[in-house]
Length: 155
Ligand SMILES: Nc1nc2c(c(=O)[nH]1)N[C@H]1C(S)=C(S)[C@@H](COP(=O)(O)O)O[C@H]1N2
Ligand SMILES: [Mo]
Picture 1 (cartoon, rainbow, N blue to C red):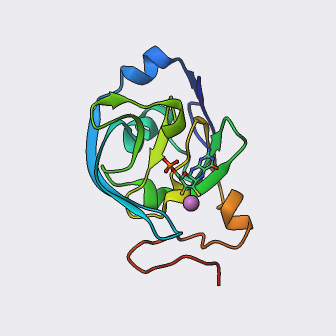
Picture 2: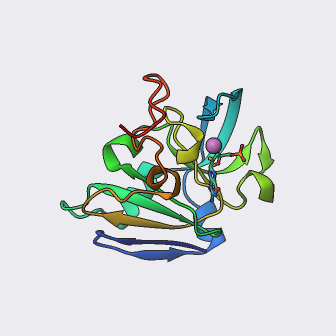
């Protein structure tokens, strides 16, 4: 269901039941696509990324994590960017289970980043020593994707 591996002391394969046993975190945020549209006040619920880290224990050499999706999409973020309690692997939006089109069973929510960092259909989290370039990042979009700095294209 969800494989978490790479530069960690304790790699795991979690069943859906095990994913649901993590503390449930709710995070309300706006969602911004790099193309210009936004959806305001989304209430996401799921597993806080830092709770997952506590289980797998990243090695001191781990710097980033690549999110692997059922459609072969990938995106990668520094662990420092994934550290906040608003960063989730979400399975609910506004109280409803995620539909497949919205990323069922798990999607990444990083409110400060453009939506292409919000991986849908996440099946794996791979901790790495250095940052890997994801699907859109390899095609010219900013690897920082910082919404507030309007950081859209790779420079
Ligand atoms: N697995 C996967 N995740 C993905 C994508 C994708 O193609 N595959 N597209 C990204 C982009 S470019 C955007 S804008 C958002 C769209 O999320 P939404 O469909 O919920 O609006 O998903 C992101 N996550
Ligand atoms: Mo997008």
